[in-house]
Image 1: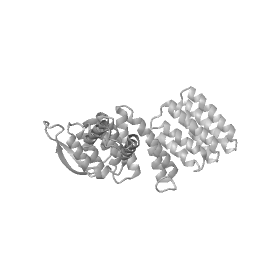
Image 2 (image 1 turned 90 degrees about the vertical axis):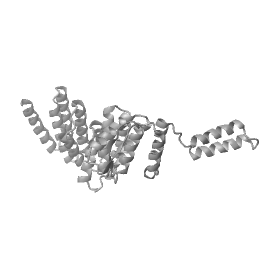
Image 3 (image 1 turned 90 degrees about the horizontal axis):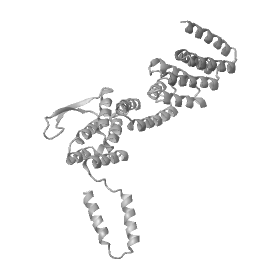
Image 4 (image 1 turned 45 degrees about the horizontal axis):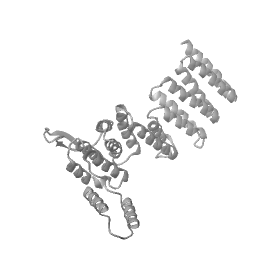
Length: 333
């Protein structure tokens, strides 16, 4: 209790200093007191102090000094392992709301907030859409958020079981924020990458957590045998074709059934066929699980043909090259 009273007295003195126009002196005093409190591990008092100072200085258009204290607050978040809750996020958003759009320190603050608090990009993006001048969200912030999502995705794809669960939830959150027609495309993007690495467990964890993260409209129910000798088990058919596609791939790779995989591939080709990354991932899955050879890229075939023409000089064909070409043609079939 004594500590809280002491902090309150200190805050009052610092506020008076800022209001009197002693900005630099006040900033330095905020930092001095914050360092002392952190050494005493009084992190909540530090956070309160720095948040108060950052807000006050930004309100007085002292953006550099305000940014300094705001970033010091984020450092204390990390030091104290502050949990992600409404209070910790609201402080960040309140500070962000006071930054002028063109202020250089705004980007640095957002960057530090991203690296320090899990899911903060979703929270900030929601706030920006609700309170900013752009109905679809601040374009600059949106671009930054998207880049950070991609970095987070790359990191989580190489993580642990917990990472796989987390990325499933994150994919759903991002799909909601983007307001896409079919959220399942974000699920497919994750699950197919896991399957292309032949990691069924992580793919299943991501799938399960995406599905449980929100309400998924259903279109029906059916049954499937996970193995020919197994009893049929029920599964849902969703209104989202990307979820159905992902689910069918997960079921298919658990069986020794290359024909079934080709059937799934053919059925959903109209869905994913215009997306080169998805096409390549599906081909990788076919190779990893069923040893289905990937088609040669047309560009490579033309390069080989030109190389053969220039090296052969128009003479008799090399029988070894003919055998090699015949074998490759069989592989494509």
